[in-house]
Image 1 (cartoon, helix red, strand yellow):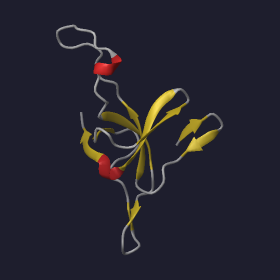
Image 2 (cartoon, helix red, strand yellow):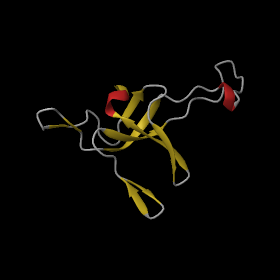
Image 3 (cartoon, one colour):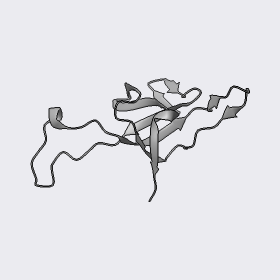
Image 4 (tube, helix red, strand yellow):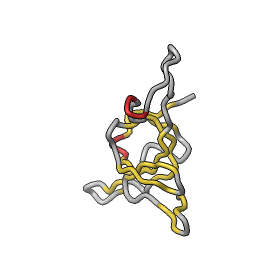
Length: 102
């Protein structure tokens, strides 16, 4: 869970709270990129996970990731919000493309 002023955010079901990792602000050639030229981040650190999705047979399938993992997610996935002055995303576990190891 992450705090919002005096409240706490706990993702529900198959939702995951992610802190997007910012991309480089310069190209390899050293050119500074303006905000309008930057791509949306597709990599982030998992802050919190929900309990998992409920399957048709009533059993719960836990998410494949845990808090602290670094993940790649779909470019336009999730809902953006600001928590304690930082941008975070709430995404579905189905929007996770890969776990970054190492």
